[in-house]
Length: 197
Image (cartoon, rainbow, N blue to C red):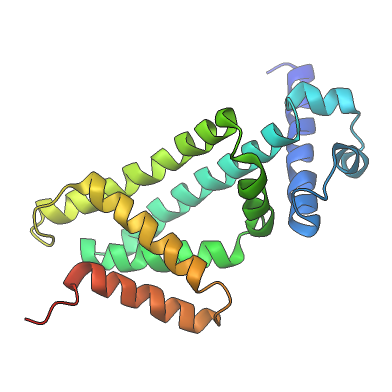
């Protein structure tokens, strides 16, 4: 790699680090391009060389953290022997990430303000597609092992995503311990239902 390209990558990484800090502290709307330039010491031209605009920078940050989350989960899932244990582990991991995510507040703000743009919505949906692939493979593994009844793994992946996000949304102001218990209970219901036997 040439020195110029290496310097460009270092500049991009520095922008990414400082922008993550600013978005975490101030939120999406309150963080301006000028704030990012000031925090990084980069010119607007340098910032725009790496990122088309603030939205693209934020999408890059989300995608980066999203890919890190997937890598961390793939390492963590090795701790679980059964697909059922993986499902409970995944729900707990999902919640922990949500509670500790540095871009949580800014991400919610971004979703509310930017997803009306069809180009940005398409990029976010494409990013989320990799989560469905991960969930789908978990359900397929459980079916193949005889732990889960035959079902459509892709459908179950969508149900799981909706269930976990829904629990987090309705339990947003709950204490962490109660939210963990509620999410665990939701996986119980997903696996066992509520119909009297």
